[in-house]
Length: 352
Image (cartoon, rainbow, N blue to C red):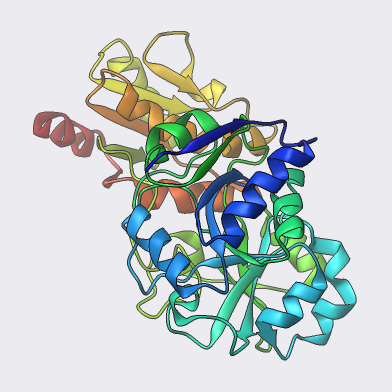
């Protein structure tokens, strides 16, 4: 397949660039485009045939539902049933933005999009290019993250082009995503809102809109759901091809860093205060004062493990507050093991 690549300013896209994507969607094709969270691979959400193309290109399990992206509330009512009153009243507080909500699905929604469920996951992105394409097409857009299934999500057009050139109709070369983590997914149909997937909107902000939320082990990345209504809750995700290990204790991470930081078999990933010195085999995720920078850089650091000459990546744990909850969700799912003692790490070294 010939893939058209369009260079575009995602904040101020030209009308021509927007219409190109709109035309592809209307014809049943696939586009790779930036959102504020990560790059998505999108199709007409009403087309079962187009949705099947996404599953094929991504090598994605068919029971893993797709998030449907909208540009206005009229679209929401076309693809859902029984929209809760709280959404009708407060939607401007969270949309456009990185929050996905589970709704009862309209009969118009193909099973290929919903994963065969009677629910549908919906969000309204704040990225101007993404929302403009959806609005111009007049179609809700089903769009999971633009990455081969289980691989790290893509936050830069450079990786999007590498991964999907030749397998989709159109890729927008639009630079980096502003947030770098997927949307938070919540289910508000019960007594209390449940965070199904931690993401770019932190739980504290969700609580300020909807009241106290429930955060279980699935949202933390500790457990998986056998019957998922949200993407990212059943299968292993975000993994580089080379092994990544997480060191649970900060002091242990620093000891291992001092011992192995000059050993080119390892690429150390962490906050500045954890890395302690400059070097070629480390990736800084920024300072500890604002974990939004770490969140934005996380997936690109996972992909750098594979691009480097190292044999493995090493990362430390983060406090599970605000953005730290989503960061730890991604690290747990990407890591092959949790290192709790120096002996654990020594055994890992011997296995390489």
